[in-house]
Each structure stands twice: as C-alpha cells, then as structure tokens.
Amino acid sequence: FCNYDRNKETVVQQVMAGALTGVIQVAVTNPMEIMKIRLQTAESATVSPLQALGELGWKGLYNGSGVTLLRDVPYNVIFFLSYIEIKRALTSPEGEVSRARILGSGVAAGMLAAFFGTPMDVVKSRIQMRNSPYTNGAIDCAKRLYAEGGYGMFFRGAFPRMAVQGPLYGIALLFFELQSQYLSS
Image (cartoon, rainbow, N blue to C red; front, side, top):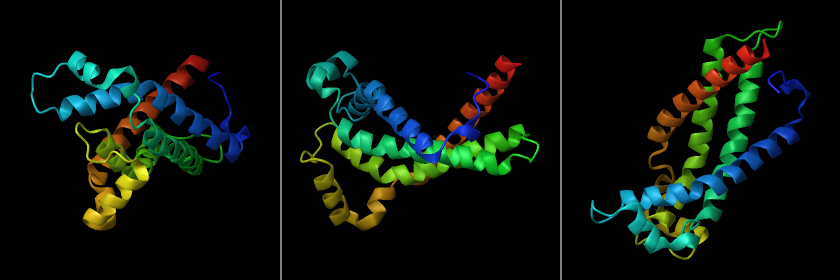
C-alpha cells in the first residue's frame, strides 16, 4: 500500500478517486458541518448541540448536502490532481523530491482548491445557516447572492479560506508522505 506508484494512474482514475473522496467526505462530515454552523449562528450562547439536533432532526443533519457535494467533489478533484501534478513537476529526474517541495505542493494545491471552491462554500453556508432566507435551493441562492452583490459575493472569505487550507493540507500531505516513506522502508 505505501509503495503505490502514482505514475501508473491515469488522469481519469485520479479524477474518479478525488470525486469519490468528496462524496464520502460529505456523507461523513455534513452532519458535523451543519451542527457547527447552527451553533455558530445561534441567537443565544446557551444553545446546546442537543437543542440544535432537536431543531434539525436526524434528516436535517443532511440539509444542504447536495450543495456540499457541489463544493467538495470539485474541491477534491482540483486538490488531488493539483497536488499530484505540482509534486511531479518538482520531482527530480532521479525521483527525489524534498520535504520543502512536498510541503509547497500541498500548500499550493490546498490554496487552489480553496479558491475555486469558495463560491459553492458561500452558497452552502448561506443555505445551512440558522433561519436562512435561502430556502429554495442552490440555484435560487446563487441568483439572489449575485443580485445582492455581483460576483464578489461568491468570493467573500476566499483569502482567509486559502490561508487556512493551504498550510493545513501542505502539512498533512508532508507528514503523510513522510509516514509512507517510513512505513515502506
């Protein structure tokens, strides 16, 4: 497992792996994400997770999961393809790549994916917030956001998002690569 050679993969296989990763990620994390948003936007600081769950119901934990898929599937495709290609470009002809280049590849891939994923993140967050006025789906929400402020509305928070996700994924991938090397030696 740890000695897997990415050079044998096709771009289509990498796209499918990234997309499936996004689907699984949404299935697992959407309930936590909507609870986080509901608790952060609660009118009272005393709202507990159980109260938020009671308000949402079990089915409500997947509110906005369609738009979350529209955010996370492309995000993961962009992220993994970018990481693989940037790392490949920075790898020496002998197959060596420094830790700094692994880190840089992960940071760059995380920042690219975060930037291009921000419009759907904005739409998702607006739909999932407590007492959201955006109750008619992602397309309606996007149209209303555009009417409120043009394309700039879709990139609110893009740079802070990039500043968090770039280093987060750079560090994660560096340590993943280091552990893979260690385990396969």
